[in-house]
Image (tube, rainbow, N blue to C red; front, side, top):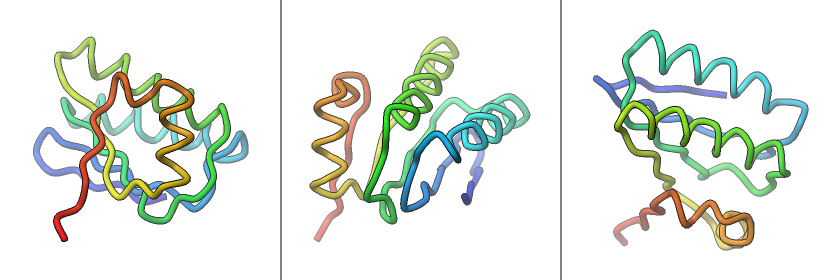
Length: 103
């Protein structure tokens, strides 16, 4: 997984699959970066992602709760149709803005 920190914003470039095998690493690394860099905004980049199970949803929800308590925001970009369905069915779209690309 790749991460990019710019000022108080963390972009998480998600892998092709987010499941119980890699969600713990994602949780640990992102929390470390959030704490160390005083992050207030988290962007989940779904460009490469085509599968996510409930543990991936848990990672997103956990980061949302953490950032919300700090007064920040969480959003998603490059969300394909399949991932949009997963995020909508799980209720994540009610707490997280999904930004469309400008074509």
